[in-house]
Length: 212
Image 1 (cartoon, one colour):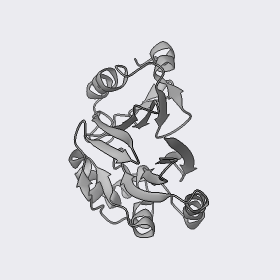
Image 2 (cartoon, rainbow, N blue to C red; image 1 turned 60 degrees about the vertical axis):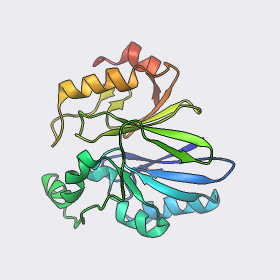
Image 3 (cartoon, rainbow, N blue to C red; image 1 turned 120 degrees about the vertical axis):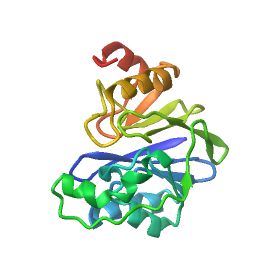
Image 4 (cartoon, helix red, strand yellow; image 1 turned 90 degrees about the vertical axis):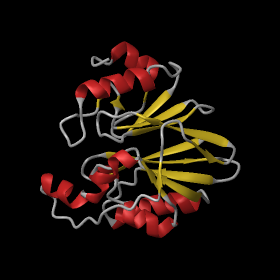
């Protein structure tokens, strides 16, 4: 499985595309595009790689990870996957924008398919496993690609840090439990691609991350 990272919007959010090299079947993860320039950057890559966007995967529904959801849904016609437990955040995007003093009109998100713990999605022949990891938000999801050895961690785990827990649905003890039970039990060589900042590995986080 191939992966491409884009850094979008004023929050420096990581938007990813993952795809199967043989079939070009792809998923867009956490579309954070906030203006036409960022939309064009994403579209140009999709066209250049001849990708077939089959799904829009949301790790959670905080606004910085969903700024581009309306555009992506229209541009690619792909269903939106997310956790039922975060549906309320998707319905309250306008309130989220006001909390950050952003003069934006954001419509509620309609989730096409609710993703459960352990659910297997497929791009080509390669499985993508969803893992429920609450704590940053109630419905935070991880997307684990075991055959390629990488994990999309959203805002659960960062390089040498963890997600904040002072937003709606956050809880510090729950987050730490999720990290230990859902991430640290994966192979130490697993590459971790977070929702903000550079990639890391589970081994490095077990050695250097002061929170775990």
